[in-house]
Length: 281
Image (tube, rainbow, N blue to C red):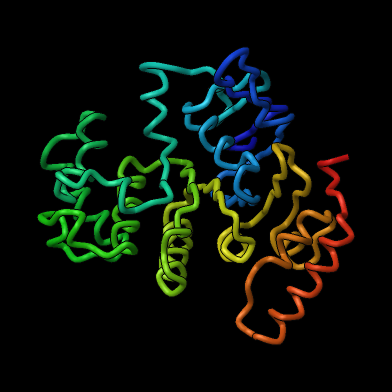
């Protein structure tokens, strides 16, 4: 049985202004993620990928369809039942500079989810020490404020917070897009190491195929609120079948200037042909 199963999910947002019309964002999304698996979800800005993560977290209400987690229908779970799910489903947000409360010490930030779940003070202190060790931060970090850390270190703190309750699934919403390339690589390697040691599953949301390729076992490509391609990450990121995925691959930067120039040339040719994605048909 899959840990996470999304079945035929539709979601609309209400419109604004005079005679507002709702905006359809997701169109029949179906996805599964197994225990201990990293499922990549990749698409351009506005494709609906973050909305899927928000629906799993209970931050966006589906119009129809179902979300199952660990055999339980969580589509419309709210209130106390949703808070109880926090033990098993956590999130790492995109921006490490705004996702941490600047007025709290790192120890207080990490202790917060533990105390909400009833962990004793002594147990929380030990857990915080373990978490800082897991994300490779110094033991005295718990006394310091977020502003004393770099962007990469702040994202490690956010990862530690997500790990505090030993969840089964972490929704990673563009967790490295605000970081420089060298820091991205270190954070991605950390996520891989944590998954190997803990068995946590990831729903890894990104616009970057290269990032998804580094982390994910399987990858789903979303375009205009529809899944256009799904498969093993090695297949999707090296030999994509859908024209939209092919355009994403050509847009991804490479280190070799000649290869990058050739990619740009091929993308101009493909864009000039205006090839549709299967999601547009």
